[in-house]
Image 1 (cartoon, rainbow, N blue to C red):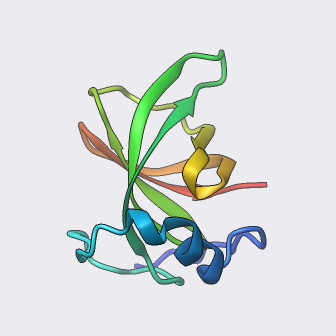
Image 2 (tube, rainbow, N blue to C red; image 1 turned 90 degrees about the horizontal axis):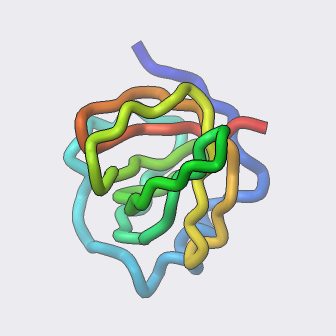
Length: 111
């Protein structure tokens, strides 16, 4: 069953490619691709800002026009909604948790 996600108009495929070009990992995603938009593999450092202001260090493993696959530096149970900040990619957005394992999470952009 595929998920239909609304594209974020601020995050185009061209913008992702230009922002991440120096950071591209040059590898395919390990997860199957059931997405509406193409993933761009990367290794970009950033952080999650939880609703009460707690910050968790992360790295983005891939970014698309609809969401991000994150690597958590420690096993944390994430809330359903939080902010993701990836300064070098120009991303600072509220997101919805789609799935989570111990050290990875998939999120999609929300308004």
